[in-house]
Image 1 (cartoon, one colour):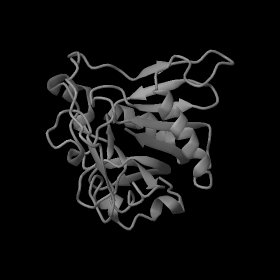
Image 2 (cartoon, rainbow, N blue to C red):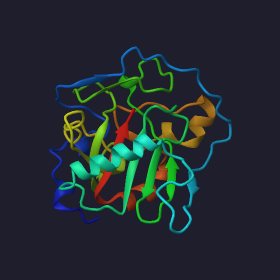
Image 3 (cartoon, one colour):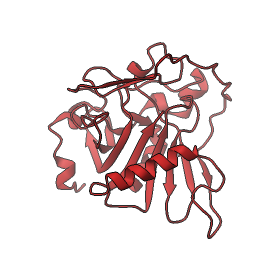
Image 4 (cartoon, one colour):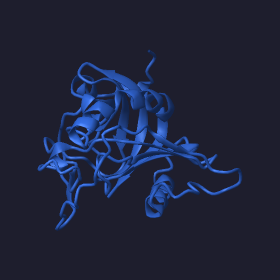
Length: 232
């Protein structure tokens, strides 16, 4: 597989670790966060939900994604325009939602459609394993998820996690993503069978883990230079 120069500049971390950590400073807390009552998740796992926008309509006409998440992401795309070279689609993560629900969205900015997937959060963000991320950090060894704007940096392969998508953090809240080896990768604990057994996804070390099946289209379509924006 041919990797871009950008994908090769890993400092060894993503190739060796997948969901490991490294150095930083800031930690973001959802003050006074209390895990809401867990929703009942059907035993039979759902497939990724796809909605198509009618021709000529606005982005996400069916309201799958929180409007404020879309607005914040589009503002981040403008702020980080020099790093976001491709604007045909963007990727959003809604960390307010339960881990067993769809909360990773591919938003087509040309056709308006939205495809929804599930993704895990870091174990440090949810120490009690409630299924809700409650705190976030860019700190090394925190095993927490990080919020903010990322630029996708292309498909890669790691010795521990296998096929993945690299990410570059663009803000103080996530700018050590590459050193921490925060990536998008497939994981057994994000597969439908795990959800059917446990009623929620397992936790990562801060990576955006997805099911092995969902990683295939995501890895192909994310590419380089697209926005991923995670928010609570």
